[in-house]
Length: 322
Image (cartoon, rainbow, N blue to C red; front, side):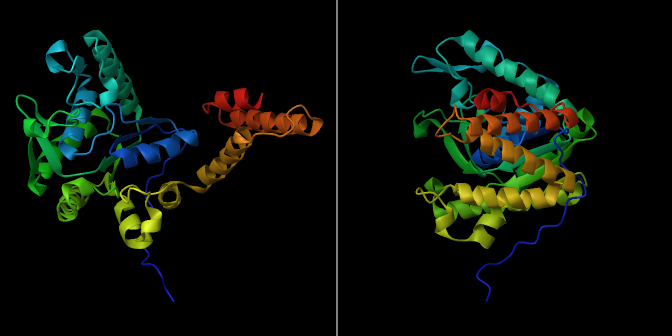
C-alpha cells in the first residue's frame, strides 16, 4: 500500500559544493534552508534585506545589490519615532537615521561582492499578494502601519514575468556563471484567506514555471509540492498550522541534497555533522579522562578536515569543545 504521493525530482546538472558561494533570498523558508547550509559550512549569505515575501520586492532588492546602489536619507520613512525602509525587514529600523543607513548599505556592499562570486542563487517566492504605499509603491514590509495606509492587490503572472525577464538578464550580465534555483514557499499565508492563498501560490507557480522554461540556467526545486503533496499532513506543520515543522524542513533538506550535492559533498556533510553533534553534546563529567580523550579526538578530526578543506570555519566548534 502507498500512503503518500512521491514527488519526482530530477538530479540537477549543476552541483552545490562547500567551496562554491551560495546566496538565498525570499521568504522565511529561504531562511530555514539558508540556516541548514550555514550549519554545514557552505559559503552562504541569506536575506541581505531581511525576509521578503513578494517577488517584486525581492526583484527590487536584487537589482539594488547587482548595482551596488546605496540608500540615502530620502529612501527612509519615519514612524513612531523610528526610521525604516519599506524595502527592508524591521531589524534594519532604528531611531537613528545614520544607524539604519549604515546597516542597510553595509549589507548591500557585502551582498554585492558575494553575489559577484556566487555559483548558486536561491529565490523563494512566498506570496503574490502585495501592498502598495503612496510614493513608495510595492513594499516588502508594512512595518505594522495601519492597513488602511496600503492598497492590497494580487500580482499577475505577466507582471512577475515581465519584471524577471529583465532582472535575469541583468543577473546573467553581472555574473555569467550564476545558476538560479526558484522555489515557492510551502508556508501558507492563511491571513489572506485559504482561497486567496491558493490563488497566490498558483500565480507564483505559473510565473516560475514559465521563467524556468525560458532560461536554461534557471531551475525549479519543488519544496512546495514536497510539503503539500508528498508530506500532506498537519503533523508536518507547527502549531500555527502554517509553518512546516523542523522534521518537514529536514525532509526537504535531504531531498535538496539528493538533487544538488555530489557524493563528495555528502561525505563531507556527514563528517561536519559528526563534529557539530559532538560540539552540542553536554558532558556529565567534563573533567574526566574519557571526555578529554573524546575532545582531543574531535579536535583532531577538525584539524584533518581543515587540512583538506582550509576554507571551512570551525572556530565556534573549537571554542565549544575546548
